[in-house]
Each structure stands twice: as C-alpha cells, then as structure tokens.
Length: 352
Ligand code: ATP
Image (cartoon, rainbow, N blue to C red; front, side, top):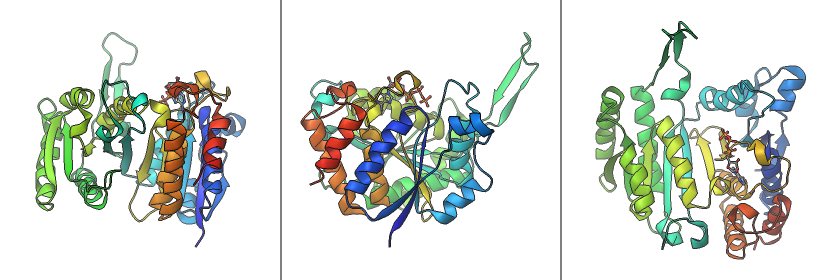
C-alpha cells in the first residue's frame, strides 16, 4: 500500500535540503505519496499560527511518517514557532526515541587521522521527551541581582525504562553496515555528579540489560564518552543517553562523519507515526544560497523509507550518496563544488 508522508520543510536551509530529499525519494521508485505543509516562520509571521488546530492529531491520523527540514529564523527571535512545532511534535506525539546513526562514508570526511569508514559505525539513541528540555522550572526576581533560575531535569521511571529498552531492542534488530550483528549497548550519564537522575538510569539500565544476556552492557560518564569518541570511535556500537547529553554528543559525533550536513535522524514512537529530520538546524547564515549539503536530509529520507519497510529503495539511496561522496559529487562543505540542487540531482540520477 502507498505510504503517506507529510513533508514539513520549515525554514532556512531546511527548505532547500528537503526539496532534494523529496526529489530523490520519488526518483528511487518508492511507492509513497508526499503532502507538503507550510508550517514555519513565514506562516507564523503571516498569520500568527505555529501549529494549526488539531495539527499533531492530523499528522498521526493521516500519515505514516513525517519528513521535516529545520526551524529557526532570525525574524522570529523568540524561536517560538520552532519550539511549538518541533518540540511540540516530539512531546505531544510522544516520539520518545531519537535515533541518530553515526556512520563515516569515506575516510576523507573524517577529521581524525587514520580512521576508516569501518571504524565509525555506531548509533546514538537519545531520550527525546524528558530531561532538561521539558521547560519545567522558572525564574524568580527576574533581572535583579537576586535572580534565581531553575531548570528542572525530568527523569521518569517509565521514560528511562522505555528508552533503554528501545536501545537494547534496536541493538538486537540491527546490523552494522558490514553486515555483522550489533552487540553492545553503552549507557552514558553523569551519575557521579547528578546522583538522583543518574541513580535511576543506572538501576534501570542494569535491570533491563539482564533481559538481554546476548548483548554486552557498558557504561561511561558523558565527559569520558566525549573524549573516547574522538580518541577511538571503533569501540562504540549503540549508545543510549538522556535528552541533553544526546543532543550534545551527536553534534560531536556528526563531525566524525563530515559535519552536520551529513547527519540523519529519526524521532521514533514504535508502531506510530514517526518523524525524520536531518540533525542540522536552519543555518540562517547560508540559507538561500543553494550551497547547503543535502546529503543529511537525503539520508534521513532513506532512513524513513527503511522504517516504513521500503528497504530496497532506501538501500539504493544510501548507495548513491556513498558513491557521490566517493566521487566528490558533493557540496563544498565536504570538499566538492556542486550546489545543493546539483548534488541532489546527481544522487537522483545514480540510483542504481
Ligand atoms: P540550530 O540552533 O537549530 O541547531 P544553527 O543555525 O545554530 O541552528 P545549524 O543550522 O545546525 O545551527 O548550523 C550551524 C552551522 O553548521 C551552519 O551555520 C553551517 O555553517 C553548518 N551547517 C549546518 N548544516 C549544514 C548543511 N546542511 N550544509 C552545510 N553546512 C551546514
């Protein structure tokens, strides 16, 4: 059956890279129907609407997946639309697992010396609905010398357990790109300093891990993890961590694969409509110049197709991007000289 995809390009380079991703998805022969939505800064500035009434319910009801670009526009300094659309989608549609594959396609893209593609092939599973990003907290005596700002870090038993279980299930169901079974889950926290939340993560990780005896459980403090990712990325397989640590560590990890322009992600709620977006933001500084790297968005499209069970076309897209990188048919951020559109066209024309 034809899968229905809602496409929300958003702002800035989101619009440019999603156009290429949609072009490539259709060129791959995937049997999908795409419907575009204009949610973003322009719409907000025109009529004050960030998310139309019933918008999230409509997405969950009428679509199999959502492909999103990026949100953020200097004309909306409060970033209210980005918050309401993107965080709203994650929280209200309960897209609790943010899955961010970190895979190096070609040695030339990695700033580390002597690192080969086979050395960088891990996945970060970031908790997506809790932690420090729920906006819980407040400010007292604002703007005075006595000001107090409190930012709460929310960790529920249910939320921690389901993301850790997701990481083990993911490990069990996935292979590395060389076809070997994934076999290790590493949980990262800062439980030596943040003892309350860390204690809960530690206990749940141990409990859930015991249900998966064939998978190796490991732990690293988040600061050590950052150091080790740069020192030796080979040691990682599946990493699970909280919302904020996952946000930070995946930007670091993206630099191992050629920068933000190459990184893909999925915001998943198993069995429900899930949302897919490139890891990068709207990059206002380069928006409108037709130079943004579309490969992160195109690989995000491939990830979405795979999630929808359209594996053959997904594989074709990944292979074409790999070939483009090898042949330097890329935008300038990763060493080529093509425009956003030309890079998208090249991939669309080389789909096996
Ligand atoms: P956000 O706060 O939403 O992450 P941002 O503009 O601060 O948004 P990004 O949009 O992620 O951050 O981009 C930061 C910088 O990384 C950009 O200014 C740009 O130089 C580079 N960058 C990000 N994405 C791309 C891309 N697709 N192609 C080329 N360069 C990119």
